Length: 191
Image (tube, rainbow, N blue to C red; front, side, top):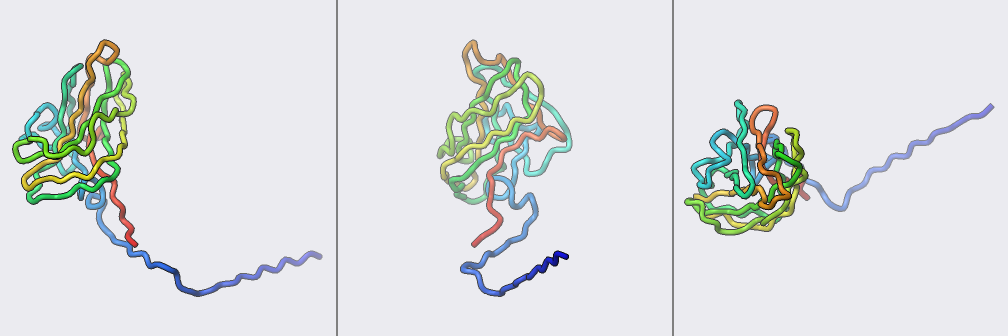
């Protein structure tokens, strides 16, 4: 006969550091500073801040075309007071397809109330590969610290590169089931 004896030893003690846990809603802890900025019907082709990206997911859907050598723009809502965007990881999520396989160039800047660039967060980062079928392309990149002046904005510029080897156009989709947005990852746990 074989007898197995299990001994469970429990100890109590203290840990070297305490960890504070904060609770918040998903929308409070995702996105640049406090929110995700979603593309809407009012965005994309406007090069001025009057075409802002929304703080909540849109209920409609749509798309727009960005031809070779041209740009589209995603804008945050206007910041009432000045704010500092810390150096951290940014995420751009696009629902997109190209006339052929390729990439777009992404630049993120802060602007004043009229849309004039104040500081550069990141310049000329390539998106992930964009195929000829509509699909989600997630691009993650490191951004520098930047200051947004009072009444300023965050501006994301999407450039369709020139040159015969690049797609002649990209179609960017937005809205329900195909959310195009930009955000910054935030830590929820604090020590």
